[in-house]
Length: 374
Image (cartoon, rainbow, N blue to C red; front, side, top):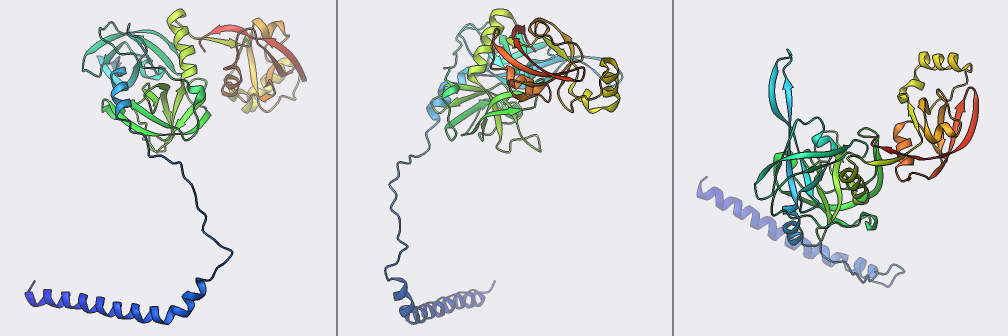
């Protein structure tokens, strides 16, 4: 561009600025009476706030503390191609895990190791070990694995029962294959019940800390680096983080992992019934078959159809093809709601069960029995 053109642009800008300055002075002079009117005292007065707000915490020390306790997990399975030819053992998935004890006990998600013929664990210091699966619990989506390795650093365990909405949290794992990734956020909700997995995720911690595929089984900690949950699921329309992630609370993690280490399975309280898929009551053909077998046609629209009965339910008078409709006042629409009601219960507890039996609505008290796993 020619020099004269530069000068013309600068001059135009200067002239515009000078004209604007003069216009501002003229407008200010004209507006003096109007402004003075607004300066008169009024009923609208500014409010003085005394704020105790503090700046967000510094997560550097917490990250240094937690990183050696979080591991990467590689799942290997024997695979076949579309024609059925054996392609050998190949890596089929990745996830994260958390070291719970110096003897190599690690907790992760069930879906991280489910179906694995071999599980490899990579530590923060790059050492790799083959892990043994001690047990899996599809109901809670938790699993416990173990490695034989020296110089392990167990994580410090916190108390998920003391969490509050708005509290700072930190997620550490291996999202999308990027080891030792830290993200931070807050607890955005508590006690979320999600119809995911085998029987649903109950009382989950919701967070806006970024959680992506590969974070599964990793740590959710408080701002000091204490473990408060195991990351398990996300809500997303794309499969990637949109700021809504869910973790299994630590009080549930402790219960399940202790059971698996001791018994090889998690213990639960059960009614003593096996049941048909929930969809049975939505198909006219199946409804008619049940009606024909029991001699009554007024089947409820929703509930759980009993397939087999034993233990407490049998002692309470519940029979095959009865339909459970409520437990302790909660309508039972399927396995998810039943799991939600029974999860906090213990063997020996009593629950009130409302059920349909051969055309009649009945209520009974059932003593819960100890069951293993799902």
